[in-house]
Image 1 (cartoon, rainbow, N blue to C red):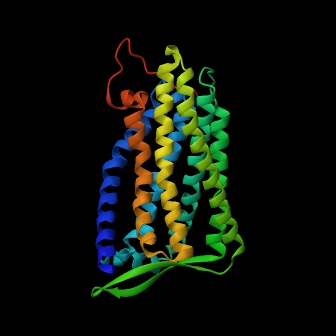
Image 2 (cartoon, rainbow, N blue to C red; image 1 turned 120 degrees about the horizontal axis):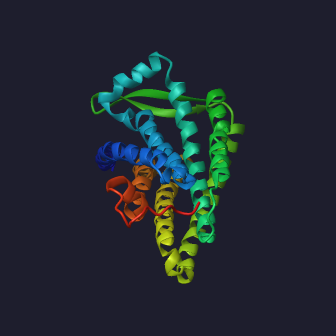
Image 3 (cartoon, helix red, strand yellow; image 1 turned 90 degrees about the vertical axis):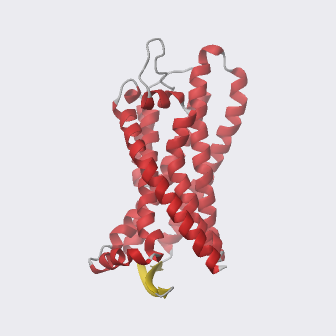
Length: 299
């Protein structure tokens, strides 16, 4: 069993790492164009999606170096450097902050899609929703970050595995109040976001019957963004469930597989938006042709 898990861990680490290497450069290119190339640059929906996408990719990279690589002998020097320079608290704080940031931004992306699809025929530049989403998303992780800085400490325990020295990351907690509060916050936000995504699925199935031809282009764009939100969050929920089962029920396999789901959760928003949203695909990979203007989605 342990040998099979070791092989599985090596394979998933290699696959997700390669996927990140392949995904990050084009994602940066596309996200840059979404932020700065007109007419998309005036659309706050895409700004929110970029915010979430960047947070997801950054969190995955931080998790890779904070936890996933710790069990590989070729990275022992890196973790010794972190401990010698007192940088463990920094990487632990960044990880904890980004963990909640990605969840909150995913929630606001789903909420934004639910709002837009219900009012497809109304056009508005919803900058207020975007700025509120950003501010709340940036503030919400603070309790967990405080918990890490004050009551918790990430430690790398050295042990020998297969004749080589590796490190096992684990968290030492000195207080339970903020930890329980942060866990409750994550669970509540996860459940609410799940409900919103289920609601989006229902809306997607129902609204299509009532969309006329004039609004079909916008609806197809909205459909692509909704699919992006649902698929990405499905992988997040698998990662979240695996984490809960591993932490509270000591299910060993779930402790291993959560990295796979986390990686898929981080890379799927970009590839889904490319595959299912014609607006973004035309902007990113083709020149705008005369007679085929870019359709700016409702916000």
